[in-house]
Image 1: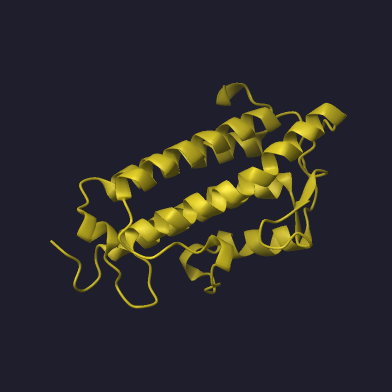
Image 2: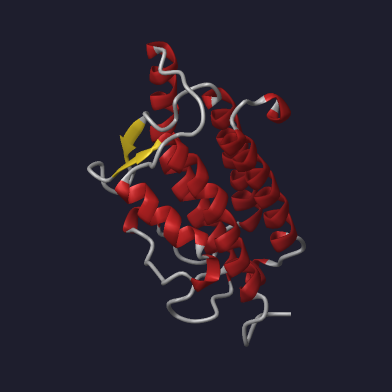
Length: 193
């Protein structure tokens, strides 16, 4: 269905979600529990924690996005690209994400932080696949809506509003960033064989 979507933004986001799933598969392939849960430093995340963080953040956004999309469809809020300037908060987040590894470090909000180590990497990988399928389904259902007019409060702070267009782009940029971080764990001193 991706090829038939009218929105170039949504087509690009879906391609990014699919690419991130492939990237995640490569990162976790053949990992032992010790490798998946190895932390390169006391304040650094393990591979498993990086993936859990992505699962948590995408799920929290989807839990807000899906009902908003349904309500917008029922209200007939149709439209197409361009989706406008977006919100101040959304522009700030996307500007940071677009910088990739060069971006200033911003600590994950408490609600998005992963749990302690000793996480089950197979379960986290299954969750990642499921969350990305859910994000793709949401993007497909959003085609034809005016994604610049649909605004909602972020899962971190309801007063910090973003547009639906921004909300779809955020994980498309966020996932590769943390998957690259997970891959770098494998080069850290002390990484188990």
